[in-house]
Length: 345
Image 1 (tube, rainbow, N blue to C red):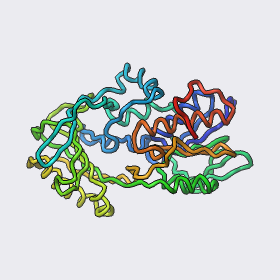
Image 2 (image 1 turned 135 degrees about the horizontal axis):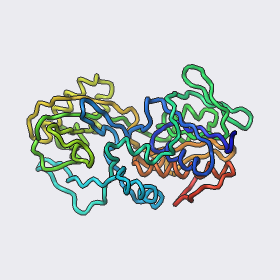
Image 3 (image 1 turned 30 degrees about the vertical axis):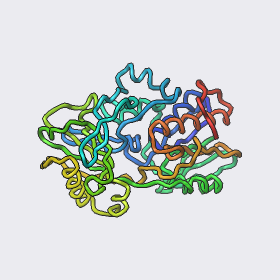
Image 4 (image 1 turned 120 degrees about the vertical axis):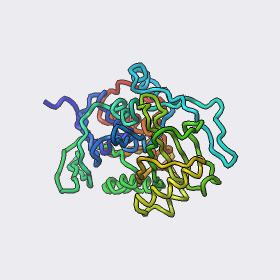
């Protein structure tokens, strides 16, 4: 027997999961759809032969009381742990460590564990939704094969901004707002190196005048808590926005070779990795954010959220989904279990 309104959440990353959690806690019956094989979005982990790489989001910070409250029990359970790695800037003169930075946190034993921990526990269906259509006061969804789902009392879109624009075709005003958001892609390099490179740092923001400006970030992934500390170091490198614009459509093997050369030049250590892979994130960075926490149509319960609302941070994604979930619950006449810290439509 249905005990609460039916809500569809499109997108199973942090924003979608936090929206689903807020709605579930208020009494809604939530279904999550994600086009990938598993939920998480850029909170992803690549695994191969006992090794792993957090090749999307690297870490997160926690400043807002709503996120801190959610993290408290997860920290006690060991699902969220501080990363005490040595992080700083890699400049032409060498590495300069940060001084007095705020704590960085990671999911344990991998970043992808954070998705389920912060989420609602709702089942995520691997379905690519292509269209949302009104059905009286309700909504129906259609996937890429033409199959229909619903009807639903409310819909939350928690996808990258370019995908949200097409899904919001039934709400042109919202679609136009989301279309103003500018996002950029990213190439990620994953390395498995037998032994140790002997580097004195665990993470570094790479200065533009290092290695031809090809890299923006490098990190020793196995320096994070809970990762395997074996005979193989796992390294991540993210390409710089300028380099990506030139090499966006290159083949992954060509990108891997070029970024490996840049990595070797940046760290000043010659290496022959056992594993060299590259992965392209089509919508990774927010260059021009929306400028507000979320969007919710004033006439009917359909809205959008994501890290692109206020900037590409995990905390921003959580708060965007969390606050839209609370606002949608209120629109449906539900009483949220917890209030938003700073919700704004």
